[in-house]
Amino acid sequence: MTYVRIATEEAFAPPELFQRYRALLDSGWNADPGFCSLMGFYLTSQSPRIAEVAARLQDLGELRLRDMDETGIAKQIISLTAPGVQIFDSPTAVDLARSANDQLAEAVRKHPERFAGLAAIAPQNPPAAAQELERGVRQLGLKGAIINSHTGGEYLDDPKFWEIFEAAEALDVPIYLHPTSPPPAMIGPFIERGLDGAIFGFAVETGLHMLRIIVSGALDRFPNLKIVAGHLGEALPYWMFRIDFMHSRMVAANRYASVNKLMRKPSEYLRETFYVTTSGMAWEPPILYAQSVLGVDRVLYAMDYPYQFVPEEVKVTDDLPIPEADKQKLYQLNAERVFRL
Image (cartoon, rainbow, N blue to C red):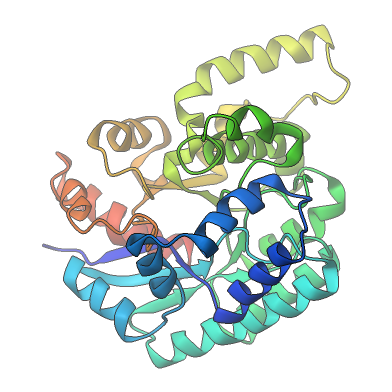
């Protein structure tokens, strides 16, 4: 074996974040049904599996390292679990992000060969988010930002958030666009059938977010921005032909004032701005498909620890019928390049 395994979408949660979530739920707050449904389940379930996930989320030491050793993971790129700080009021979110980043950076200092981290930021306050990203990278040694998709139903295609893009581009670090539950405006049909979480709602909501960023023209304004998305691109690689076709028709017909003429096809932004990880998608056909349409330099390995901590899934990636050089890119070299490890 000529590579080491770097897992790029691995979550943690400081105990005080769970305390804040619990206090929010106990207060009767219900402005975000997706948060109440999902986090309410995680905080009240008596399931042994849920208890194991919670314990692993809060551990940045021996338990996590033991799990990595047992599955052959050399390094984790760790980030604050969804929804992170993005459901709180702005001052609380800014303070919690700073505290989480300090704790994560300390764990990285203790285990520099095993851990790297992404900075949590509070998009509720774009100037503070940009400042915290810069502090996280320049002072704490973190490798980019984690943004758990929408913030109160608002998306990063809105120019008021573009200070965050500007900071990430200037620092030459990626933004990891991680899923969260769909916002109130779209969650109803999902939650009625238990489809609001990782089973489907996450992918629909985050894929929508990715497309909103692309068609907004933001990536023409920030051509060197790097965005990472999990779950093999939230199904968008499969849709590239149709997205290109229909976007060009809508622009030509001037059907929507909000649909901008872009400098490139939508699929080109997917191939040139976005990177995707295999988190939660330990299945040979879609991994090979993503590599074929995006390129082997654009697909990175991830486990989705601890939510999808299934040790035998590592073997699926080990056994992919691809050249050893491409496997080294998937497991190691792409992550080292994108996150500047």
